[in-house]
Length: 380
Image (cartoon, rainbow, N blue to C red; front, side, top):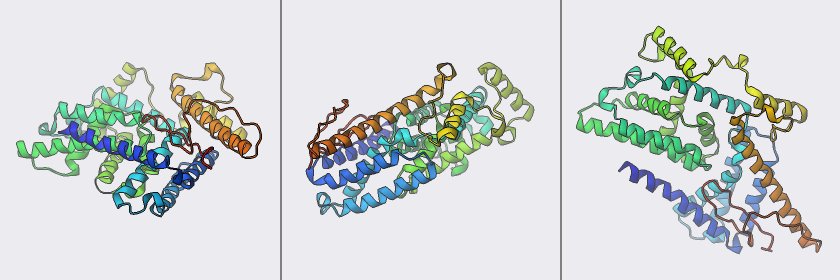
């Protein structure tokens, strides 16, 4: 039942997305396509500021929802049709802007590393009893399923799909609690039962970039969708993260000396050093490079410009790949804009940069991790 639940909930966004792409292929959608492209291009040229970026995106979604409701292509559309269009728009826009908006500051990257390291230490000794999880709720099979759902979160770029990973994880836990209450006559205690299990599952999962994923969902998921069940589960995972960040011996049912000895043994076993307070923490060469570049030019977008090969670490690969995609996206957008201007003025066309199948203002569908593309060059 839990597997069916997860698969059915994940199929809906795909349907919404491809319906959105089909509508955008209609020549009548040219005005909407131009608005979307204009927002993406203009957004990409500003330095990251997560709170401001989130507001810009939410304002754009609000404006586009009104435009879609009034558009002839959605004449007579139901509330559900408009919602599907907005889900498709959110996925398209945030997939395009992912490298620019996800983990966009050195502080986010540092916080992700600190949380991951702490969870690695806790994984070596933490048991359900330390979180006062009753035996009736200790179900390794259900926990494993919940862990797998939460670990999927970094495989997606759209806020809704990341949120679905969180919801599917929490639904597995909730089903475990309900089954225990029916079969074992366990009296449910609400969040007092749910949150400790979620904390334990989160520690077992150690989902990559937990802080950045939660921040991304909070900033860029349409706010009217962060309500009800989604808001409850999301808030609980935020609480679980905060608990883990602040966790010490007093947070657990464990003697202080046993906790400290276990943490020290874990540090030795994992060859990691104790995380110092943030103002004393050496944030590593990649973050120092970022700060140097910021001080020189005020540009947060390309933090590795002054880096030497020997200063880079394996952990920098993912960020470098995101920056590379960001550069290619901007270059492609500029090429298309210049080509369009050259064509309209009768001048020589700019060579196509390749890599996309383009048509009249077409959104080209890709996989969940591939940004579709827009081209209106022949749509006029």
